[in-house]
Amino acid sequence: MRKNLSPAPWLPAVLLTGILLASLNLRPAISSLGPLLDSVIEDLQLGGLVAGLLTAAPAVCFAVFGSLAPKLAVKRGPEVIVLGAMAAIGLGLLLRAAAPNTSFFLFFSAVALSGIAVGNVLMPVLVKQWFPDRIGRVTGLYTTTLSLGTAVVAAVAVPVNEAFGGNWRFGLGVWAVPALVAFGVWVTVSVGVHRQQRSARPARPPLPAPQERSARPAETTARTAAAVNPWRSPTSWWLAVFFGLQASAAYICMGWLAKIFSDNGLSEATAGLLLAIVMGVSIPLAFVIPNLAARRPNQGPIVIVLGFCGLLGHVGLWFSPASGSFVWAVLLGISSCTFSLALTMIGIKSRSSDGVIKLSAFTQSIGYLISIPGPLIVGILHEVTGGWQASIGFMTAQLLVQIFAGYMAGRSGPIEGPAPEPQAKPVPQRLQGT
Image 1 (tube, rainbow, N blue to C red):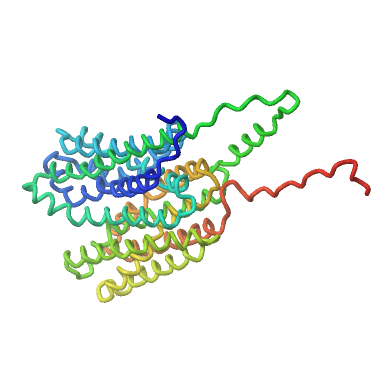
Image 2: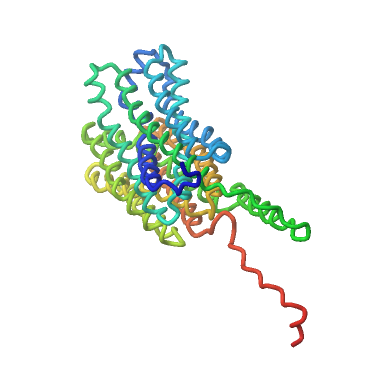
């Protein structure tokens, strides 16, 4: 058997399949719980505080566990870590469904969410590393798959649960199956990547002669590593704020938009349909927008267009939430495509895979922390005022900040700073003065 094998031709196709399957599993743990939450609360006798923790847990886990992804990916490789993430999601969902009490239910929910958090961070990294010339296209594919998985699971969670006799344990546990399928594909990916790395490993080069040795390469490497520091990059902070506020807007939409419509005279069925429209509009656009963004040096204009649609939707909710409800839902759905835009910007705002790992972890960890208060504030304002005007006003103010942050992130350069200019070669001394 030959030792130096060429890279397997099937590996990119399997990698793309693995990325799409992983994306499909990054939301069912969350979107399947909401429709069955009342049954879970009744069976496990969850208190109001614990139920509130369940709704806030995704953002908290995304922030905490997502920050661990860079070190794990650098140490073991992102493919191996995504393999572990799929295992965590599958086992977490299975064991959560079998949880005998509240403590186990919360623990295994956190296990599944930890896998999702790591997957969130490493998807842009894998796209940058394996498809650097197709970042927009592949990002569009996996964000579309993610959105589709979210919408479909939310829509069929109750019918699937009823098909299992109304037992919420089967209704929640069945969503472990796609994660375990994805796990099997990532086993193949990990084996293929390991073989490729082993076959491509070059022989150890001979040491240079003493007079040829220089400290400059080490110094250059150190400077390059030090330059990739998201904490010191304005681009990273603008992008983190943009990501966090768009996530906050998404959680507000999923948690409160249907109630805003129903409280203004629409039936619950109609309100649910309008929420589905918001989620559905973003599915085709989640493929188009990353392609547009990846081709432009400045994504700021796209941020402004999407934000303007959101502002029009908020104005409609303020003045006439019922009569123009379909139009407002479509506008808000277009505005929600900032999620795929933000992920694309993560992939193109660094020149290296290591930089994307750090930027993705920084942006999503800080961003999900920023997203936590928004839905709570909307609920508090509604409870205090008894109406939705104050809440919509808060949503509009948050959207204005989001637009500004996204515009600044879009016009900023990579987190490493400007590309260094090539240094001119020194003129030989014998040619000087000629």
